[in-house]
Image: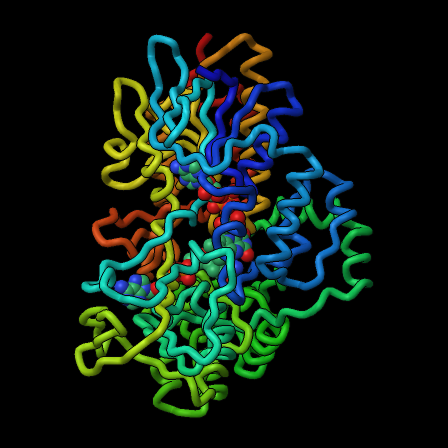
Length: 531
Ligand code: FAD
Ligand code: NAP
């Protein structure tokens, strides 16, 4: 049986960097990846319109000065093919593929108390043994397709944005249905509308979307950023969202008069990206303050969409703005002004079934050639639970997390020694520029393994009491935010039966990093270390 110091599961941004860092420090590593190549999110999500919502200058690795200087981003928010090309370049540049087993699904990982190591079982292959297990399985890597009656009977192609085929899908002139209007749907819909004969969008909840204001990255802008890259990266590391945003006014929404309010919101709308949510200091803390920004976006929707009835259906009223991840769009609302686009509100007219040639709602049957699901993911805990992890005493992670995920710092779990979760629940992860958070986690974990090695220790396990305290802290911070009141995937609300627990840590990337550093400096407080 092949034996390694570390087995890493996943070869996206996180697994690739973990491999590079560990190898540099002399650990033997094997990465196991279900996909045929590197890229993770950017390997799987190939749908038209897919692009990042954090500027590419920041949504990229900072660990290598040469890498960040040599790569040239063509747009403010790069599209999926460019991000994937970047990750392929990273794999080539650091010769990563030789230690990655592709097309290999991890089926189970079990901690063996006698040998004090992990046994990792894979589909169609020899199991692996490792002292340490690092999960880099991503927060958004388990696509969720709703169980709509009759789905299996549909005779045309059916695709999910998170498992998009590699060959282009021919949608020209076709009758297409898109189900779902989150970030993926909002990017996909304008692109499909351009080519489809007819597009029906099945919307359950309207989301708030603001213009990305994407644009080509002028040579000067990139050159300027590169000339002070280390300073910009340092700002990202300290920022609460792990990226540089249009700064908040620092004022409460009701502290400013109407002209100042409008000017502040207009400035952020024109600047683009998600900064509109932090225009005022209390947007996510106070429902009335939240309404100020929400109403501004609603007014914008009404001004773009010509049919007042369609505009009203697109207007979000159920959730506070920023309660769900704000969507960045390019011509999303304007797409509903096209004559080939129709919007169905499935709250008013629920989908009853999918038939062999279309979708039947309670009131109408419509025929389609292609069905496209943009229905999201079993986020954060989903990919971890699918690893079928068993820790001390044969305890399944699924049992330990029956009432929702519990971790120490989002990086370790009591009862699961020598297992580390990159961007796990309980860390800032999805509330941040994830590349910043991934680098922080990987560096912290690798440094811990180096420390263990230097001290002649082999085992690190989160202490149950320290974990309880961290979970309490995560919950307490979340309880102050309006994000707790939205029906979001952050809370598991999109998956039937999933425990309703706010999974990411809202304390901010910079503050979280300081906490992690303090814990490391104190000899890994909250961990039980053993020889
Ligand atoms: P992933 O990229 O998800 O990689 C995990 C890998 O693990 C996958 O390749 C998967 O196949 C593999 N894996 C999982 N389970 C197993 C198993 N059992 N066996 C073998 N392999 C397994 N974040 C941002 O900060 N900014 C953005 O702009 C942004 N845009 C996004 C756009 C889309 C469409 C989506 C879906 C997410 C986006 N995200 C964004 C979040 C994104 O997931 C992260 O930014 C980042 O790419 C995650 O990297 P990762 O390596 O942690 O996980
Ligand atoms: P999502 O935000 O969970 O949206 C899923 C959509 O599908 C929602 O509109 C949801 O409606 C709908 N839906 C789910 N089940 C349904 C059903 N049975 N019937 C009708 N509608 C249904 O998923 P996502 O859009 O894939 O985005 C997930 C996350 O990935 C984002 O929040 C973001 O973090 C990341 N992402 C980022 C970008 C980017 O801009 N860079 C792009 C894509 C994804 P309800 O709201 O009613 O549940």
